[in-house]
Length: 343
Image 1 (cartoon, rainbow, N blue to C red):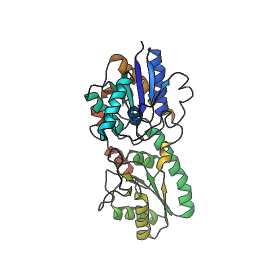
Image 2 (cartoon, rainbow, N blue to C red):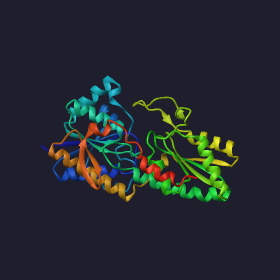
Image 3 (cartoon, one colour):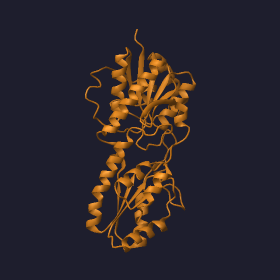
Image 4 (spheres, rainbow, N blue to C red):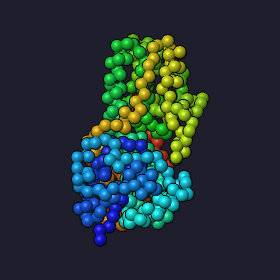
């Protein structure tokens, strides 16, 4: 009887999930496994909501964004009854191993299950690129390309109307998207969660730029950036299943301050979920594929409790617990490069 590999995608969707699913199914079937897709992340394991995956299931999904399995932010460890059901269904489904694809929260659950004796391997996914033990997560490259294109488009409007354009990008605790897209898009100021915002310095840089005859400026700010004197700016204080607040609004607050202090017309563009959507870049398609193949190879070797990781140009394996023990914040050497172009 063939062994069964389960696969789920949890947390925020992102481009590159389907290439991972496709690779796990193709390689798994090649090696004689049966594949069970678990719908809607950990919620599907709690509810025993599954579907068998075969070659036809993954045909044509490589260029599609999102995930054919659906996703959720369900945390089985938040509720004792949910956790009991998830463990029971793991056994009922007769899973030899589960491939968990996600970020810090999804893989945090996976790491806990490993400690309780379940066979799980991980694949790192997040557009924020804030997962430890891997140089890049898939989804990040697509997100920064989308954000960069949006910044490019805002340049023409800013220049035509002589405005300050504040662009709010994603990034809860790490400024990778802001830094990469800001540098690539020629932003005049980039503000990240790792460095509290000095609003007076921000205004000074804009005035300095305009004193040289420039009539517009582009300011990129990560959603999780905070003012030096103040807390995170929130859309709402309600926590999700993993204890996270819903961020958003820093762009509006910053734009109001800039306009008040400079007198320059200031507008805000919040890119939001646009960064998560659409077809994955070639880089993310290839990286997701490589991660999926590695996940099945780890299962074949019995290397459970491990995660596929990109280090340099090699796909290696690292312990799941190493990947989720702390967030990977922005490389400040990169931010120093960005600062050369401020103002």
